[in-house]
Length: 180
Image (cartoon, rainbow, N blue to C red; front, side, top):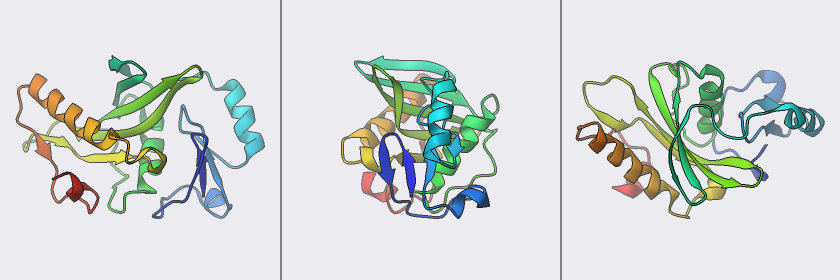
């Protein structure tokens, strides 16, 4: 079980968190920096010291309480790695070894406590195929609220701004086929 973002979430797949954590009944995750933590006491201590209230990187879009942050996997290794570990819990075919060559676009909802991650998509910085999406995830508690469509639309808008056609990497996952 994962406890993050004020939610208890049952993972769908294995993710290679450190073994000392995977043997515990619950892994706690800081909702802002995505650091994984072993106990609620350690999480409270961490939250009192964590000064991050939004994803690292640049906020590149905001409308009402919704924002997108662009995160460079090379410049923000720890956050990107933790984001990929979290994503692996819900994406069976997620590859974890290559964060550096990717940009991550994190969708958030803002409240008085900060910017809370809803989902993200990633894309390769350099690709001959001009793919606009390598990986896309809406966290389970946030699904069925239109965020998947928003992530996809935003990826195409970025491609247009870059003067590229853009299409997602193939093959699509089972969940990705829903958006065809």
